[in-house]
Amino acid sequence: MEESALSLIPPVLALVMVILTRKVLLSLGAGIVVGAFMLSYAGLPGDESFIAGIFTSLITSVVMIFGILKGIFIEEGGINQWNVYNLSFLLMLGVITSLVALSGGSRAFGEWAMKRVKTRVGAQLTTAVLGLIIFIDDYFNSLIVGNVSRPITDRQRVSRAKLAYIVDSTSAPVCVIAPISSWGAYIISIIGGIFLTLQIADLSPLSAFLQTIPMNFYAIITILFVFATAIFNLNLGKMKEHEDRAFYHNQLVDPSKGAAPGQSEIAHSHQGRVLDLVLPIFVLVATTVAFMFITGLQAVEGEVTIFTIFENTDVAASLFYGGLLGMLVTFALFIKKDVPFPQFRKGIWNGIKSMLPAIYILIFAWTIIEIIGEIGTGRYLAGLVDAHINLAFLPFLLFIIASFMSLATGTSWGTFGVMLGIAADIAVTVDPTLLLPSLASVLAGSVFGDHCSPISDTTILSSTGAGSHHIDHVITQLPYAITVGLISAVGYLVLGFTGSTIIGLLATLLLFVVVTYLLKLRNDRMASTPASNEM
Image 1: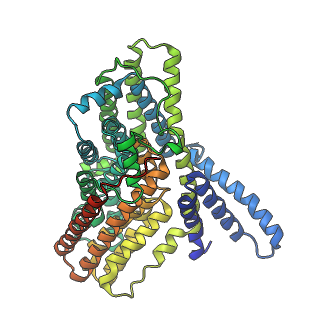
Image 2: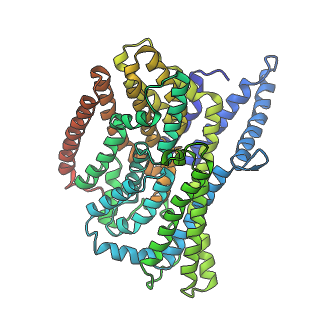
Image 3: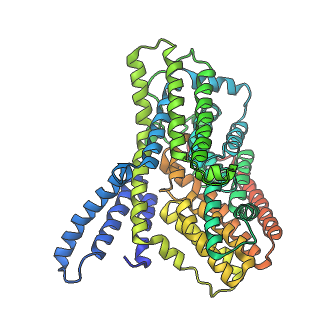
Protein backbone atom coordinates (compact mmCIF):
# COMPACT_ATOMS: atom_id res chain seq x y z
CA MET A 1 0.00 0.00 0.00
CA GLU A 2 1.38 3.41 -0.98
CA GLU A 3 2.21 5.58 2.02
CA SER A 4 -0.27 8.46 2.35
CA ALA A 5 -2.28 10.33 4.96
CA LEU A 6 -4.73 7.39 4.81
CA SER A 7 -2.13 5.34 6.69
CA LEU A 8 -2.92 7.45 9.78
CA ILE A 9 -6.52 6.20 9.92
CA PRO A 10 -5.99 2.95 11.95
CA PRO A 11 -3.79 4.41 14.72
CA VAL A 12 -5.76 7.67 14.93
CA LEU A 13 -9.04 5.71 15.11
CA ALA A 14 -7.65 3.57 17.94
CA LEU A 15 -6.34 6.61 19.83
CA VAL A 16 -9.58 8.57 19.50
CA MET A 17 -11.70 5.59 20.53
CA VAL A 18 -9.50 4.98 23.58
CA ILE A 19 -10.07 8.55 24.72
CA LEU A 20 -13.82 8.52 23.99
CA THR A 21 -14.76 5.01 25.14
CA ARG A 22 -12.04 4.27 27.70
CA LYS A 23 -12.15 0.68 26.37
CA VAL A 24 -8.65 -0.25 25.24
CA LEU A 25 -9.33 -3.66 23.68
CA LEU A 26 -12.37 -2.41 21.76
CA SER A 27 -10.40 0.57 20.45
CA LEU A 28 -7.38 -1.47 19.43
CA GLY A 29 -9.66 -4.05 17.84
CA ALA A 30 -11.34 -1.36 15.73
CA GLY A 31 -7.96 -0.08 14.55
CA ILE A 32 -6.84 -3.63 13.73
CA VAL A 33 -9.97 -4.44 11.69
CA VAL A 34 -9.94 -1.15 9.78
CA GLY A 35 -6.22 -1.38 9.06
CA ALA A 36 -6.47 -4.98 7.87
CA PHE A 37 -9.44 -4.10 5.64
CA MET A 38 -7.52 -1.16 4.12
CA LEU A 39 -4.55 -3.39 3.34
CA SER A 40 -6.78 -6.10 1.87
CA TYR A 41 -8.80 -3.69 -0.26
CA ALA A 42 -5.69 -1.96 -1.57
CA GLY A 43 -4.32 -5.31 -2.69
CA LEU A 44 -7.33 -6.21 -4.86
CA PRO A 45 -6.98 -6.38 -8.66
CA GLY A 46 -8.43 -3.39 -10.51
CA ASP A 47 -11.17 -5.36 -12.28
CA GLU A 48 -12.88 -6.51 -9.05
CA SER A 49 -16.47 -5.22 -8.63
CA PHE A 50 -17.26 -3.05 -5.62
CA ILE A 51 -19.49 -5.59 -3.80
CA ALA A 52 -17.20 -8.50 -4.59
CA GLY A 53 -14.22 -6.38 -3.51
CA ILE A 54 -15.79 -5.62 -0.13
CA PHE A 55 -16.59 -9.30 0.48
CA THR A 56 -13.14 -10.45 -0.64
CA SER A 57 -11.46 -7.80 1.51
CA LEU A 58 -13.41 -8.86 4.59
CA ILE A 59 -12.38 -12.50 4.15
CA THR A 60 -8.78 -11.51 3.44
CA SER A 61 -8.77 -9.24 6.51
CA VAL A 62 -9.83 -12.06 8.81
CA VAL A 63 -7.16 -14.34 7.35
CA MET A 64 -4.57 -11.56 7.71
CA ILE A 65 -5.43 -10.90 11.37
CA PHE A 66 -5.26 -14.59 12.26
CA GLY A 67 -1.94 -14.80 10.42
CA ILE A 68 -0.55 -11.93 12.50
CA LEU A 69 -1.84 -13.50 15.72
CA LYS A 70 -0.20 -16.77 14.77
CA GLY A 71 3.05 -14.92 14.06
CA ILE A 72 3.03 -13.49 17.58
CA PHE A 73 3.52 -17.01 18.93
CA ILE A 74 5.00 -19.00 16.03
CA GLU A 75 7.50 -17.93 13.38
CA GLU A 76 9.42 -19.97 10.80
CA GLY A 77 8.21 -23.25 12.24
CA GLY A 78 9.28 -22.49 15.81
CA ILE A 79 8.10 -20.36 18.70
CA ASN A 80 8.49 -16.60 18.57
CA GLN A 81 10.85 -16.50 21.54
CA TRP A 82 10.74 -12.73 22.10
CA ASN A 83 6.96 -12.59 22.48
CA VAL A 84 6.46 -15.97 24.18
CA TYR A 85 9.26 -15.35 26.69
CA ASN A 86 7.93 -11.89 27.52
CA LEU A 87 4.38 -13.17 28.01
CA SER A 88 5.70 -16.07 30.09
CA PHE A 89 7.65 -13.63 32.25
CA LEU A 90 4.45 -11.67 32.88
CA LEU A 91 2.64 -14.83 34.00
CA MET A 92 5.52 -15.87 36.26
CA LEU A 93 5.71 -12.39 37.78
CA GLY A 94 1.98 -12.55 38.46
CA VAL A 95 2.41 -15.89 40.23
CA ILE A 96 5.36 -14.58 42.26
CA THR A 97 3.41 -11.47 43.29
CA SER A 98 0.31 -13.47 44.23
CA LEU A 99 2.18 -16.05 46.31
CA VAL A 100 4.33 -13.41 48.03
CA ALA A 101 1.16 -11.52 48.97
CA LEU A 102 -0.61 -14.72 50.06
CA SER A 103 2.34 -15.73 52.23
CA GLY A 104 2.28 -12.34 53.96
CA GLY A 105 5.55 -11.15 52.42
CA SER A 106 4.02 -7.99 50.95
CA ARG A 107 2.31 -7.17 54.24
CA ALA A 108 5.54 -7.70 56.18
CA PHE A 109 7.51 -5.57 53.73
CA GLY A 110 4.90 -2.83 53.95
CA GLU A 111 5.08 -2.83 57.75
CA TRP A 112 8.88 -2.80 57.62
CA ALA A 113 8.88 0.05 55.12
CA MET A 114 6.35 2.05 57.17
CA LYS A 115 8.94 2.35 59.93
CA ARG A 116 11.39 3.91 57.50
CA VAL A 117 9.24 5.60 54.86
CA LYS A 118 6.73 7.57 56.90
CA THR A 119 5.31 10.06 54.40
CA ARG A 120 3.58 10.03 51.01
CA VAL A 121 6.45 12.09 49.63
CA GLY A 122 8.95 9.56 50.91
CA ALA A 123 7.03 6.68 49.35
CA GLN A 124 6.99 8.39 45.96
CA LEU A 125 10.65 9.40 46.15
CA THR A 126 11.60 5.84 47.10
CA THR A 127 9.83 4.58 43.98
CA ALA A 128 11.54 7.20 41.81
CA VAL A 129 14.99 6.32 43.16
CA LEU A 130 14.33 2.62 42.53
CA GLY A 131 13.38 3.54 38.98
CA LEU A 132 16.71 5.32 38.51
CA ILE A 133 18.68 2.42 39.96
CA ILE A 134 17.04 -0.37 37.93
CA PHE A 135 17.95 0.96 34.48
CA ILE A 136 18.99 -2.27 32.74
CA ASP A 137 15.80 -2.61 30.69
CA ASP A 138 12.45 -0.80 30.52
CA TYR A 139 10.32 -3.98 30.73
CA PHE A 140 12.31 -5.10 33.75
CA ASN A 141 12.15 -1.64 35.33
CA SER A 142 8.41 -1.19 34.81
CA LEU A 143 7.40 -4.50 36.33
CA ILE A 144 9.91 -4.83 39.17
CA VAL A 145 9.76 -1.24 40.48
CA GLY A 146 5.97 -1.27 40.44
CA ASN A 147 5.73 -4.56 42.31
CA VAL A 148 8.38 -3.69 44.91
CA SER A 149 6.99 -0.19 45.54
CA ARG A 150 3.31 -1.10 45.79
CA PRO A 151 3.38 -2.14 49.49
CA ILE A 152 5.08 1.16 50.35
CA THR A 153 2.84 3.47 48.31
CA ASP A 154 -0.33 1.58 49.28
CA ARG A 155 0.43 2.10 52.97
CA GLN A 156 0.87 5.83 52.36
CA ARG A 157 -2.36 6.02 50.32
CA VAL A 158 -0.66 6.96 47.05
CA SER A 159 -3.00 6.17 44.15
CA ARG A 160 -2.05 3.40 41.75
CA ALA A 161 -2.32 5.93 38.91
CA LYS A 162 0.37 8.09 40.54
CA LEU A 163 2.53 5.00 41.12
CA ALA A 164 2.15 3.99 37.46
CA TYR A 165 3.17 7.50 36.37
CA ILE A 166 6.32 7.42 38.51
CA VAL A 167 7.22 3.94 37.28
CA ASP A 168 6.65 4.80 33.60
CA SER A 169 8.53 8.09 33.84
CA THR A 170 11.62 6.51 35.40
CA SER A 171 11.86 3.57 33.01
CA ALA A 172 12.26 4.60 29.35
CA PRO A 173 13.64 8.10 30.19
CA VAL A 174 16.40 6.49 32.27
CA CYS A 175 17.08 3.66 29.81
CA VAL A 176 17.34 6.03 26.84
CA ILE A 177 20.24 7.93 28.44
CA ALA A 178 21.99 4.92 30.01
CA PRO A 179 24.69 3.46 27.73
CA ILE A 180 24.83 0.25 29.80
CA SER A 181 21.25 -0.85 29.15
CA SER A 182 19.35 -2.74 26.50
CA TRP A 183 18.17 0.61 25.10
CA GLY A 184 21.65 2.15 25.09
CA ALA A 185 23.14 -0.87 23.37
CA TYR A 186 20.36 -0.90 20.76
CA ILE A 187 20.71 2.82 20.00
CA ILE A 188 24.51 2.64 19.84
CA SER A 189 24.28 -0.27 17.40
CA ILE A 190 21.88 1.70 15.17
CA ILE A 191 24.15 4.75 15.24
CA GLY A 192 27.09 2.50 14.36
CA GLY A 193 25.28 1.24 11.26
CA ILE A 194 24.33 4.79 10.28
CA PHE A 195 27.92 6.03 10.66
CA LEU A 196 29.18 3.13 8.56
CA THR A 197 26.68 3.88 5.81
CA LEU A 198 27.35 7.64 5.84
CA GLN A 199 31.12 7.07 6.16
CA ILE A 200 31.44 9.05 9.38
CA ALA A 201 34.83 8.05 10.76
CA ASP A 202 35.76 10.93 13.08
CA LEU A 203 33.14 10.10 15.70
CA SER A 204 32.51 6.75 17.41
CA PRO A 205 28.93 5.55 17.98
CA LEU A 206 29.49 5.41 21.76
CA SER A 207 30.90 8.94 21.84
CA ALA A 208 27.99 10.19 19.76
CA PHE A 209 25.49 8.58 22.13
CA LEU A 210 27.18 10.04 25.22
CA GLN A 211 27.15 13.50 23.64
CA THR A 212 23.42 13.28 22.94
CA ILE A 213 22.62 12.71 26.63
CA PRO A 214 22.65 16.42 27.68
CA MET A 215 20.58 17.17 24.53
CA ASN A 216 17.90 14.63 25.43
CA PHE A 217 15.75 17.28 27.06
CA TYR A 218 12.60 15.18 27.36
CA ALA A 219 14.32 12.39 29.29
CA ILE A 220 16.10 14.79 31.64
CA ILE A 221 13.07 16.98 32.36
CA THR A 222 10.75 13.98 32.76
CA ILE A 223 12.97 12.57 35.50
CA LEU A 224 13.20 15.96 37.23
CA PHE A 225 9.43 16.42 36.91
CA VAL A 226 8.84 13.10 38.69
CA PHE A 227 10.78 14.35 41.71
CA ALA A 228 9.05 17.75 41.57
CA THR A 229 5.67 16.01 41.39
CA ALA A 230 6.49 13.93 44.46
CA ILE A 231 7.93 16.77 46.52
CA PHE A 232 5.30 19.41 45.67
CA ASN A 233 2.38 16.99 45.22
CA LEU A 234 1.63 18.23 41.69
CA ASN A 235 -1.60 16.62 40.53
CA LEU A 236 -2.46 17.52 36.95
CA GLY A 237 -5.74 16.73 35.24
CA LYS A 238 -7.48 13.54 36.36
CA MET A 239 -4.59 12.70 38.69
CA LYS A 240 -6.12 14.95 41.36
CA GLU A 241 -9.28 12.82 41.45
CA HIS A 242 -7.23 9.65 41.86
CA GLU A 243 -5.02 11.16 44.55
CA ASP A 244 -7.95 12.64 46.50
CA ARG A 245 -9.79 9.32 46.29
CA ALA A 246 -6.72 7.51 47.64
CA PHE A 247 -5.90 10.05 50.36
CA TYR A 248 -9.38 10.83 51.68
CA HIS A 249 -11.14 7.50 51.06
CA ASN A 250 -8.24 5.02 50.90
CA GLN A 251 -9.45 3.91 47.45
CA LEU A 252 -6.27 3.31 45.48
CA VAL A 253 -8.10 2.74 42.18
CA ASP A 254 -11.39 3.93 40.72
CA PRO A 255 -13.95 1.56 42.29
CA SER A 256 -16.27 1.95 39.30
CA LYS A 257 -13.73 0.01 37.21
CA GLY A 258 -13.57 -2.95 39.58
CA ALA A 259 -10.76 -4.27 41.75
CA ALA A 260 -7.19 -3.25 41.12
CA PRO A 261 -5.40 -5.47 38.59
CA GLY A 262 -3.43 -8.14 40.44
CA GLN A 263 -5.45 -7.80 43.62
CA SER A 264 -5.69 -11.21 45.26
CA GLU A 265 -9.01 -12.63 46.37
CA ILE A 266 -7.37 -14.74 49.11
CA ALA A 267 -6.80 -13.54 52.67
CA HIS A 268 -3.15 -12.74 53.26
CA SER A 269 -1.16 -14.42 56.01
CA HIS A 270 -0.06 -12.45 59.06
CA GLN A 271 2.93 -14.78 59.54
CA GLY A 272 4.91 -13.49 56.58
CA ARG A 273 8.48 -12.20 56.71
CA VAL A 274 10.25 -9.48 54.76
CA LEU A 275 12.49 -12.24 53.41
CA ASP A 276 9.43 -13.78 51.68
CA LEU A 277 9.34 -10.74 49.38
CA VAL A 278 12.98 -9.68 49.28
CA LEU A 279 14.54 -13.06 48.45
CA PRO A 280 12.37 -13.85 45.36
CA ILE A 281 12.83 -10.32 44.02
CA PHE A 282 16.59 -10.44 44.69
CA VAL A 283 16.91 -13.79 42.91
CA LEU A 284 14.76 -12.47 40.05
CA VAL A 285 16.88 -9.32 39.62
CA ALA A 286 20.27 -10.97 40.11
CA THR A 287 19.64 -13.93 37.81
CA THR A 288 18.05 -11.78 35.09
CA VAL A 289 21.05 -9.44 35.03
CA ALA A 290 23.38 -12.45 35.08
CA PHE A 291 21.59 -14.02 32.12
CA MET A 292 21.77 -10.70 30.27
CA PHE A 293 25.55 -10.87 30.58
CA ILE A 294 25.68 -14.56 29.69
CA THR A 295 23.45 -14.32 26.59
CA GLY A 296 25.20 -11.14 25.47
CA LEU A 297 28.64 -12.65 25.97
CA GLN A 298 27.69 -15.77 23.99
CA ALA A 299 26.42 -13.68 21.07
CA VAL A 300 29.38 -11.28 20.82
CA GLU A 301 31.53 -11.67 17.74
CA GLY A 302 34.85 -9.89 17.90
CA GLU A 303 35.97 -7.59 20.70
CA VAL A 304 34.19 -8.19 24.02
CA THR A 305 33.29 -5.04 25.95
CA ILE A 306 30.49 -4.14 28.32
CA PHE A 307 28.78 -2.32 25.44
CA THR A 308 29.02 -5.19 22.94
CA ILE A 309 27.66 -7.53 25.62
CA PHE A 310 24.58 -5.38 26.17
CA GLU A 311 24.24 -4.78 22.44
CA ASN A 312 23.88 -8.54 21.89
CA THR A 313 22.04 -9.57 25.05
CA ASP A 314 18.80 -11.54 24.73
CA VAL A 315 16.52 -9.55 27.03
CA ALA A 316 13.45 -11.76 26.57
CA ALA A 317 15.33 -14.99 27.34
CA SER A 318 17.03 -13.36 30.33
CA LEU A 319 13.67 -12.25 31.74
CA PHE A 320 12.27 -15.75 31.21
CA TYR A 321 15.13 -17.56 32.94
CA GLY A 322 15.28 -15.02 35.77
CA GLY A 323 11.51 -15.20 36.23
CA LEU A 324 11.63 -19.00 36.31
CA LEU A 325 14.28 -19.07 39.04
CA GLY A 326 12.50 -16.34 40.98
CA MET A 327 9.26 -18.34 40.82
CA LEU A 328 11.00 -21.53 42.00
CA VAL A 329 12.41 -19.68 45.01
CA THR A 330 8.92 -18.32 45.75
CA PHE A 331 7.52 -21.84 45.57
CA ALA A 332 10.17 -23.09 47.99
CA LEU A 333 9.47 -20.34 50.53
CA PHE A 334 5.71 -20.81 50.20
CA ILE A 335 5.76 -24.59 50.56
CA LYS A 336 7.84 -24.28 53.75
CA LYS A 337 4.84 -22.53 55.34
CA ASP A 338 2.88 -25.77 55.12
CA VAL A 339 -0.06 -24.12 53.30
CA PRO A 340 -2.83 -26.47 52.03
CA PHE A 341 -2.43 -27.37 48.35
CA PRO A 342 -5.84 -25.94 47.29
CA GLN A 343 -4.80 -22.53 48.62
CA PHE A 344 -1.44 -22.82 46.86
CA ARG A 345 -3.20 -23.72 43.60
CA LYS A 346 -5.64 -20.85 43.98
CA GLY A 347 -2.75 -18.45 44.61
CA ILE A 348 -1.11 -19.54 41.35
CA TRP A 349 -4.36 -19.13 39.41
CA ASN A 350 -4.94 -15.67 40.93
CA GLY A 351 -1.45 -14.64 39.84
CA ILE A 352 -2.10 -15.83 36.28
CA LYS A 353 -5.48 -14.06 36.16
CA SER A 354 -3.93 -10.82 37.39
CA MET A 355 -1.72 -10.67 34.31
CA LEU A 356 -4.30 -11.68 31.70
CA PRO A 357 -5.59 -8.12 31.07
CA ALA A 358 -2.05 -6.93 30.33
CA ILE A 359 -1.41 -9.92 28.08
CA TYR A 360 -4.62 -9.30 26.12
CA ILE A 361 -3.69 -5.64 25.60
CA LEU A 362 -0.13 -6.54 24.59
CA ILE A 363 -1.35 -9.05 21.99
CA PHE A 364 -3.77 -6.49 20.54
CA ALA A 365 -1.03 -3.82 20.61
CA TRP A 366 1.47 -6.08 18.81
CA THR A 367 -1.20 -6.88 16.21
CA ILE A 368 -2.02 -3.26 15.41
CA ILE A 369 1.68 -2.38 15.37
CA GLU A 370 2.22 -5.08 12.73
CA ILE A 371 -0.65 -3.69 10.64
CA ILE A 372 0.56 -0.11 11.07
CA GLY A 373 3.99 -1.23 9.85
CA GLU A 374 2.46 -2.85 6.75
CA ILE A 375 0.25 0.14 5.98
CA GLY A 376 3.24 2.50 6.12
CA THR A 377 2.24 4.90 8.90
CA GLY A 378 5.81 5.32 10.11
CA ARG A 379 7.23 5.74 6.61
CA TYR A 380 4.60 8.37 5.80
CA LEU A 381 5.35 10.37 8.94
CA ALA A 382 9.09 10.09 8.29
CA GLY A 383 8.56 11.36 4.75
CA LEU A 384 7.05 14.58 6.09
CA VAL A 385 10.54 15.70 7.06
CA ASP A 386 11.76 18.08 4.39
CA ALA A 387 15.35 19.28 4.27
CA HIS A 388 14.31 22.50 2.50
CA ILE A 389 13.56 24.41 5.68
CA ASN A 390 15.25 26.86 7.97
CA LEU A 391 17.90 24.59 9.48
CA ALA A 392 17.36 26.09 12.93
CA PHE A 393 13.98 24.36 13.05
CA LEU A 394 15.40 20.91 12.23
CA PRO A 395 15.81 19.55 15.83
CA PHE A 396 12.35 20.86 16.74
CA LEU A 397 10.69 19.32 13.66
CA LEU A 398 12.45 15.98 14.15
CA PHE A 399 11.28 15.96 17.77
CA ILE A 400 7.67 16.55 16.66
CA ILE A 401 7.76 13.96 13.85
CA ALA A 402 9.36 11.31 16.09
CA SER A 403 6.75 12.05 18.77
CA PHE A 404 3.84 11.52 16.39
CA MET A 405 5.41 8.39 14.92
CA SER A 406 5.98 6.84 18.35
CA LEU A 407 2.48 7.88 19.47
CA ALA A 408 0.88 6.34 16.39
CA THR A 409 2.94 3.16 16.28
CA GLY A 410 3.34 2.58 20.03
CA THR A 411 7.05 1.80 19.76
CA SER A 412 10.10 3.87 20.65
CA TRP A 413 12.48 1.26 19.23
CA GLY A 414 10.65 1.15 15.91
CA THR A 415 10.82 4.94 15.73
CA PHE A 416 14.55 4.84 16.49
CA GLY A 417 15.04 2.38 13.65
CA VAL A 418 13.26 4.59 11.12
CA MET A 419 13.97 8.14 12.23
CA LEU A 420 17.60 8.04 13.39
CA GLY A 421 18.81 7.18 9.89
CA ILE A 422 16.63 9.87 8.30
CA ALA A 423 17.74 12.49 10.83
CA ALA A 424 21.43 11.66 10.33
CA ASP A 425 21.11 11.69 6.55
CA ILE A 426 19.44 15.11 6.55
CA ALA A 427 21.94 16.60 9.01
CA VAL A 428 25.02 15.29 7.20
CA THR A 429 23.66 16.59 3.90
CA VAL A 430 22.69 20.11 4.98
CA ASP A 431 24.84 20.85 8.06
CA PRO A 432 27.03 18.24 9.86
CA THR A 433 27.01 20.32 13.05
CA LEU A 434 23.33 19.42 13.43
CA LEU A 435 24.04 15.67 13.48
CA LEU A 436 24.07 15.17 17.26
CA PRO A 437 21.16 17.57 17.99
CA SER A 438 19.12 15.76 15.33
CA LEU A 439 19.85 12.34 16.81
CA ALA A 440 19.05 13.59 20.32
CA SER A 441 15.74 15.14 19.24
CA VAL A 442 14.65 11.84 17.66
CA LEU A 443 15.52 9.90 20.82
CA ALA A 444 13.61 12.42 22.96
CA GLY A 445 10.59 12.59 20.68
CA SER A 446 10.35 8.80 20.51
CA VAL A 447 10.09 8.51 24.30
CA PHE A 448 7.60 11.41 24.46
CA GLY A 449 5.27 9.77 21.95
CA ASP A 450 5.70 6.43 23.70
CA HIS A 451 4.56 7.99 26.99
CA CYS A 452 1.41 9.33 25.33
CA SER A 453 0.52 6.13 23.48
CA PRO A 454 -2.00 3.67 24.96
CA ILE A 455 -0.62 0.93 22.69
CA SER A 456 2.96 1.30 23.96
CA ASP A 457 4.19 -1.89 25.62
CA THR A 458 6.08 0.14 28.22
CA THR A 459 2.90 2.04 29.11
CA ILE A 460 0.98 -1.23 29.36
CA LEU A 461 3.61 -2.87 31.57
CA SER A 462 3.94 0.19 33.83
CA SER A 463 0.23 0.07 34.62
CA THR A 464 0.53 -3.70 35.13
CA GLY A 465 3.48 -3.41 37.52
CA ALA A 466 1.77 -0.64 39.48
CA GLY A 467 -1.56 -2.48 39.66
CA SER A 468 -3.38 0.37 37.94
CA HIS A 469 -6.16 0.15 35.39
CA HIS A 470 -4.44 0.75 32.07
CA ILE A 471 -6.78 3.46 30.80
CA ASP A 472 -6.43 5.37 34.10
CA HIS A 473 -2.65 5.35 33.68
CA VAL A 474 -2.90 6.59 30.09
CA ILE A 475 -5.29 9.43 30.92
CA THR A 476 -3.47 10.58 34.06
CA GLN A 477 0.01 10.47 32.52
CA LEU A 478 -0.91 12.56 29.46
CA PRO A 479 -0.87 16.00 31.19
CA TYR A 480 2.57 15.32 32.66
CA ALA A 481 4.01 14.02 29.38
CA ILE A 482 2.52 16.89 27.35
CA THR A 483 3.82 19.49 29.83
CA VAL A 484 7.35 18.10 29.61
CA GLY A 485 6.97 17.67 25.84
CA LEU A 486 6.14 21.36 25.38
CA ILE A 487 9.08 22.39 27.56
CA SER A 488 11.37 20.12 25.52
CA ALA A 489 10.04 21.49 22.22
CA VAL A 490 11.02 25.00 23.29
CA GLY A 491 14.44 23.64 24.27
CA TYR A 492 14.96 22.22 20.77
CA LEU A 493 14.04 25.57 19.22
CA VAL A 494 16.67 27.24 21.41
CA LEU A 495 19.19 24.51 20.58
CA GLY A 496 18.53 24.87 16.86
CA PHE A 497 18.83 28.65 16.79
CA THR A 498 21.86 28.93 19.10
CA GLY A 499 23.70 25.73 18.18
CA SER A 500 24.74 25.46 21.84
CA THR A 501 23.97 22.43 23.96
CA ILE A 502 24.62 24.38 27.17
CA ILE A 503 22.29 27.25 26.24
CA GLY A 504 19.59 24.84 25.07
CA LEU A 505 19.81 22.78 28.27
CA LEU A 506 19.88 25.87 30.52
CA ALA A 507 16.85 27.34 28.72
CA THR A 508 14.99 24.04 29.14
CA LEU A 509 15.88 23.80 32.85
CA LEU A 510 14.86 27.44 33.43
CA LEU A 511 11.51 26.85 31.75
CA PHE A 512 11.07 23.70 33.84
CA VAL A 513 11.66 25.68 37.04
CA VAL A 514 9.17 28.38 35.99
CA VAL A 515 6.49 25.85 35.00
CA THR A 516 7.00 23.86 38.21
CA TYR A 517 6.70 27.04 40.30
CA LEU A 518 3.47 28.06 38.54
CA LEU A 519 2.02 24.58 38.94
CA LYS A 520 2.93 24.59 42.61
CA LEU A 521 1.12 27.92 43.11
CA ARG A 522 -1.92 26.49 41.31
CA ASN A 523 -1.69 23.32 43.37
CA ASP A 524 -1.54 25.26 46.62
CA ARG A 525 -4.72 27.15 45.68
CA MET A 526 -6.51 23.88 44.91
CA ALA A 527 -5.24 22.03 48.00
CA SER A 528 -8.24 23.10 50.07
CA THR A 529 -10.77 21.83 47.50
CA PRO A 530 -10.62 18.01 47.38
CA ALA A 531 -12.65 16.12 44.83
CA SER A 532 -16.25 15.21 45.63
CA ASN A 533 -16.87 12.96 48.59
CA GLU A 534 -19.03 10.84 46.30
CA MET A 535 -15.93 9.30 44.72
